[in-house]
Image 1: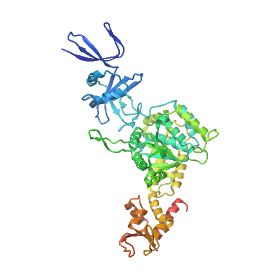
Image 2 (image 1 turned 120 degrees about the vertical axis):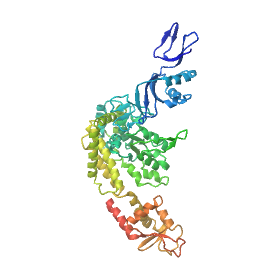
Image 3 (image 1 turned 45 degrees about the vertical axis):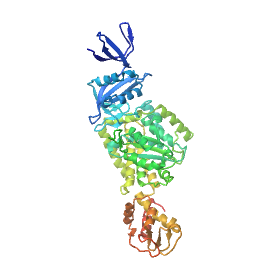
Image 4 (image 1 turned 90 degrees about the vertical axis):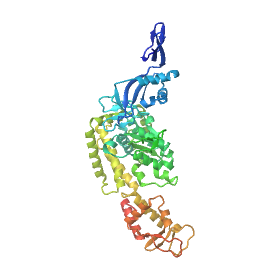
Length: 567
């Protein structure tokens, strides 16, 4: 009777006069009951058996060495061992595992036959493990007594590259952020990602906008050095929405860095920002048409560019929405002193400081984020209490209680950035004076609010501005002086004191890009819309007009100017 077994030899060996390589062997018996050793491939270890956090998706964790001697690991689902095992073999080959192609069936049989009592929970997404206080980094879990209990089996770990010590990063890199508001803000943002879940806050981003060569990229290098090697962390806006979905998933519970918004496709940019902030990709199907789980994430993101979102969208005729501004917050990068810098720390100019920071961040990176997460998992309750108390205090300092919800949402995001920076300092990671981040956040929030122009709803302000623009800037082009005046070209309506009368198509043209029901709601809120239908126009083909109070339009505009603090 023929028998078959598998032998794993980690060193060359000899049987009688024959020398054998190390490797995985299939041993069978011939008719004479002698062992026949057939080499399947290089040594291959099955180290454990794992499943996902829901108890499904069982499979094997295997390890080997690639031809250049690098250790390799892969998780092979049991379902990939069915039939010819093609998917399992492809994964092994992709990692450099060398085997005899004529022994494919034996290799799959070996994997199917392996029993291991060592089990683990596989995690395919970096960040907080669901229903735990354990944080998964690319090189393993943080906050777990047994490192082998959870194993990361996802693609492209992005948070495990470290260089230098925490002290070196703190003394050489973080120290140069002091006195530089944009560096303090950006670097604090890099610590905010893990706090999103703890505070149940949605993803959001900050966009540093300003001319070229003022140091925007330097701020991103410094912030990215919190997580790891900046060259590995900084991504580009020049990607498809699907590509950015995948990238955002890799930076779950941390910070995504997107360089140069000018490289983005402006046709999809607005939707992309909503997608990033909403933390969810599109539903898609697998090859067998079954529904694939949506990619999900929580992340802060840092962007930069010479233009802001509004100008990028306008370049292709798309309207900028207030919702964009609360999801990606514009910050003027130029400080009017030394580009992005206010304090040069003894350097002759901003270019010199930028060059130094670029060199330092290649030498020291990654240790700050790991240290932050380690401290966070050691005292999760205390950290949550500190963050919540700090956010409440920041909202009080920013004085947004009576402001529109959009402004409050941005203030809350600023509060989280401030809390993250101050918490990192309490953990001994940054070495910044207590309160330095909070002071900068308050300063930059007030600059943001002044640039926004109103503490009320930006959408409401935009709707009123459309009417003012029509009355003042375009009066001669689109408006007649009465119902009986004949004009060449398009006529949106006419003025007949005390009202502005807009034809239905003129109303639609004026508020193109706005939700019609929302426009009606805003105009009624301010008492502007007095009559919407039913007026006959004897010298025009249109039979319906919107009747809008000129006095109420002026009152609403004055109110907006008062909120802006100017004319």
